Length: 212
Image 1 (cartoon, rainbow, N blue to C red):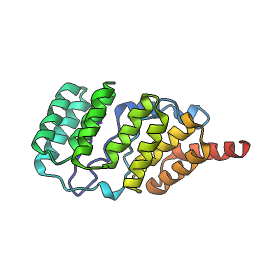
Image 2 (spheres, one colour):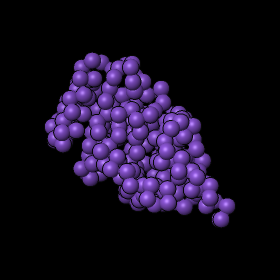
Image 3 (cartoon, helix red, strand yellow):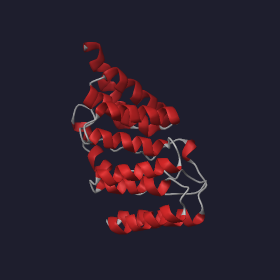
Image 4 (tube, rainbow, N blue to C red):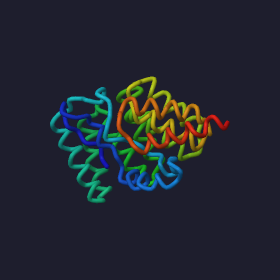
């Protein structure tokens, strides 16, 4: 789902909830309350106030158009609109972050990484872009680099819930660092308050950690 801008009324990144992720997470409860291998691209509807940003009305309009096209499964048109937005509002990283998300759904990971680099050239250490780079590193099997990216996103913006969530899943499923997974999930829950799936993951981890 394309990042949606609402000026000051809501975060421009709170709508990054990909269609793929929603379908992936719907089946997580059947695996002893643990995240599944597929649950790796995570952006939630709840999010921190730091992402609130007043955007130009023209950029808001283009992001909204792109989101609609993407929801209608017209990814090519969505990318065209986002490219236009990136050109017309060159100082803003949001169009490039959205382009990265679309490319990730198309499994064009090279283009996705380039889009995140473009976003970071406009705003250094922009947490959503760094977080997405972590996802891309995870997809490429570079788990330590993924961990570093998530931690960099958190260092850049300590209230960025999505980086904690992705770090927790990486630690649980790929690094088998259950202590890190637990602390990451708990930090995530402290920020978003309500997420029943993640609460279940925490319960499961607390049961497993004493057995180590």
